[in-house]
Image (cartoon, rainbow, N blue to C red; front, top):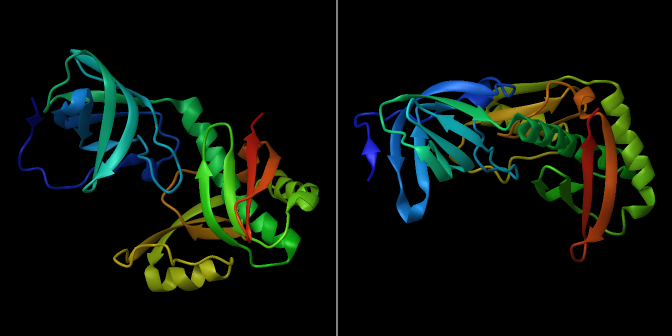
Length: 255
């Protein structure tokens, strides 16, 4: 049976956008539902990242006075972050205050791989000397990938790409978050061979993630503060995804 606090219209406050290094947080439960055997918990604020933009959702726990939920997935629904749990120990109810904790080791690895994916896009462009377009991307704990519009094989230049990426890691370049109007953002990311063509037209304020003086693009994900946190870049493999599309896989090896 759903327990809901009525009269709350504000969307979930996304704490991970305010501090991507927040591991634990306090919140109030707005709603608890159990459709199809899974618990769906909505909080007034959360540090859990919901799946999106190629980045997997965070996992962790939500603890109340009389219960604990094991969060396995998080999704955005109508501007609310919905925490999905297969398991509930005890009971969590609407209106109570709870403590959330994310699986930090998992999140931090994803942050490093996500920042690395941005870094690698520009590393490929620098080595090839071409404005290579990123067709799609994906992240996981053990690796990240980029699908690139490129004729030929990137395999022979892997050592050069890896060295270009590692050079930026060694420089510990700062990673900055900026918000700007869409019109300004279009021109800003174009300087880094990026565009906003996949961003929905209704989005008027754009969140930009920039590796200082190296790469910038629109992104809602979580990132490290400096490229130095990535550790060492390891390029894993390439494969053809069809005519004119190359996939490369890589990972951050943190110290």
